[in-house]
Image (cartoon, rainbow over all chains, first blue to last red; front, side):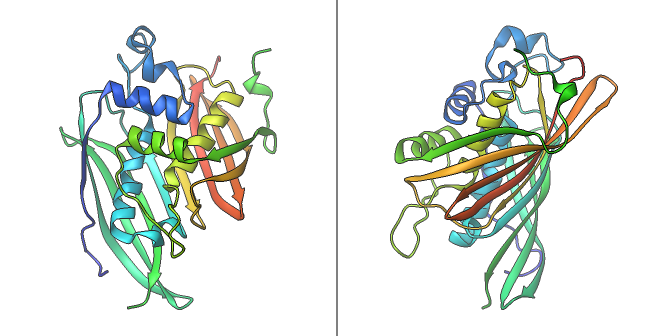
Length: 134
Length: 133
């Protein structure tokens, strides 16, 4: 992988049904995600997706690009910038920022970004993976 | 008794759980996030999506800390040192490393370690909850 290589884009529309399923799968039943009345009275004005549900799209992108190498040593540093509301679509992208040889392997650093359809950043950050030297 | 967040300090252990990453729980997670990637190791074993480990470990912390509704996840760092085969039982321990207030919000930073055959995940979660919670 060379610098400026684009990773495979992930696109999703986030639904309330998916948010509920994520709550069940993860055990995170924070009412901000699932209670319409509670969420309406919150600073967000409505239910929002779990940040980690949205972040999962970054790991999905890294897995598609790097396969088991991502699972064996991948790292992420993410900031959650804006909430994603049910019905909104997201686009997750990544670009190789730099590569370097470390301990006989190649360390690949990527900037990663999740944007909503209006262009607002939902999550941004960095992901690092090591691969075989080729 | 409700958690007194003001009294929690760095080093306090706030969660200790066993996570079961069986086929059912991994499928449930993969369907919830709509991730169709399936990765096998060189022994042909189905490997757990790393964020499934993160999701379950964070879910346990949220429940054990009795996080109030309206808590916001501000940032997340994660390291996945080694892949985990589906069917694994993992140990998860979470400790508070920072607890401070700024204006209307309390900021808590939680260190999470998940072990199986060695450490399989480490993470640092920054959460914001109402300072008067």
